[in-house]
Length: 246
Image 1 (cartoon, one colour):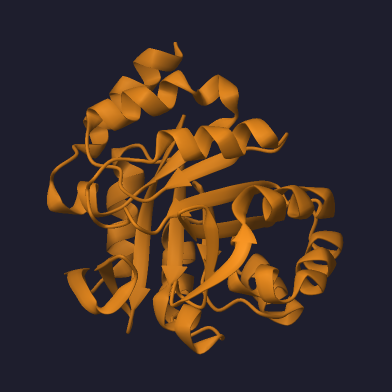
Image 2 (tube, rainbow, N blue to C red):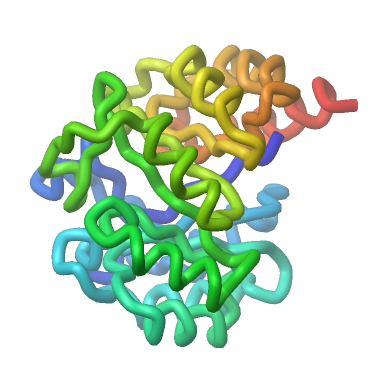
C-alpha cells in the first residue's frame, strides 16, 4: 500500500484546503522542496503534487516550485502532478523535467480526446483524476458538478490506456472524516487498473482498512491534511502498512 504525501501548491507555498475551497487554505511551508525532502526522508516512495492555482486557471501556475521539488527528490522517488494540465506540450515539459506521472482531471472529462492523445503519446505516464460527490464527477477545481457517473468514466478512460485512477471524495477532502472505503473499493472492483484513494484520510485505522482492501485493486492513498496537522503520524502509518503487507 503506497502512502503518498500530498504537497498542494498555492502561490508558491505548501497549503491545505478544506473541500477544495481556495479561500479556506492553511499555509504549512513556504519551501516546497524542503517539504518534499521531509516526506522522502521519512520514507515516502511517491509524492503527489497539486498546482492549485493551475487547476483554477487551466494552465501551470506553480512551475518554479514544482521544478524545485523535482531537483530535490526527483531522482529518488516517483513524483506525480495534477492541476492545470491541458495540453501535450505541458505534459512533455514536465516529464522532461523529471516528473513520473501527470494527472489529468478536468481536461479528461471535458475533452476526452485530449486524454486519449496523451495516453498515446506518453504511455505509462498518465493517471486520470476523478473527483466526485455522491458518485457524480466534479470538474474545474471541484467547482462544477457534472452528471457523469464515476464508474462509467473510469471504464472509458481505462480503455484509453491510463495507468491508474485517483479517486477523491470531495465531500471528505480536508475534513479528517475517514476515507470513503466502500466507494473506492466499488470503483477498484470495476477496473483492472489500480485505484488510488484520496480525501478524508485521518488515522491509523484508515490505513489498516485500506491495507485490507489492497487485494481489491486499491494501490495507495493520498495523505493530506492529517499528516500536516499531526492527526496521523506518517512514519507510524508507513510502519503499519509495511507490517500488514509483510
